[in-house]
Image 1 (cartoon, one colour):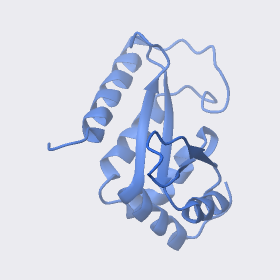
Image 2 (image 1 turned 45 degrees about the vertical axis):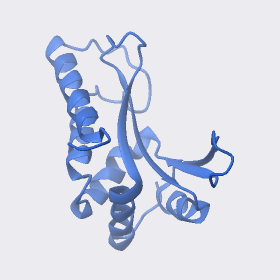
Image 3 (image 1 turned 90 degrees about the horizontal axis):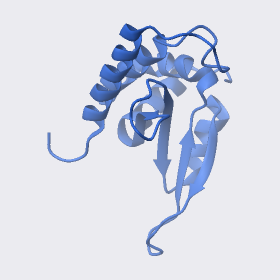
Amino acid sequence: MPNPTHEEFAYLAGIIDGEGSFTLHQHSRKGSSHRFSSQLQIGSTDPRLLEWIRLRFGGSVRLEHRRNSSHKPMFRWIAHADYLADLIYGALPYLIIKREQAELFLAYRATLAPFIDRARSTYKTPQHVKEERFKIHDQLSALNRRGVA
């Protein structure tokens, strides 16, 4: 990751609060796997914003397919796992709306074995860690639900 300033982290936090999402996707379709892919994403119809983020924080920007051709094109910035924790720690002091999601995200990443966030591991996950991951996933899913709480 490049070396962003405190002001750039503060601006990123504002964008995350408004347009970002922290997600944990299960690796198993049956929902029994304790392994999740962790992603921080920001969506926008203006690619200039996402390019600004990519240049300062790394990651990638891609164009998404829209089902309704009358909608503007949608672009999505996605942070990569190898520096995700550093990025979140930098933005955390400035987050307001998504602070709890960011903290849960960091709690999940703390359950990973050393070096697993950069490469596959043969680490044997203890049962209590698996249970903690499911608990974090459920809490994050509840916070991310749309609609009236």
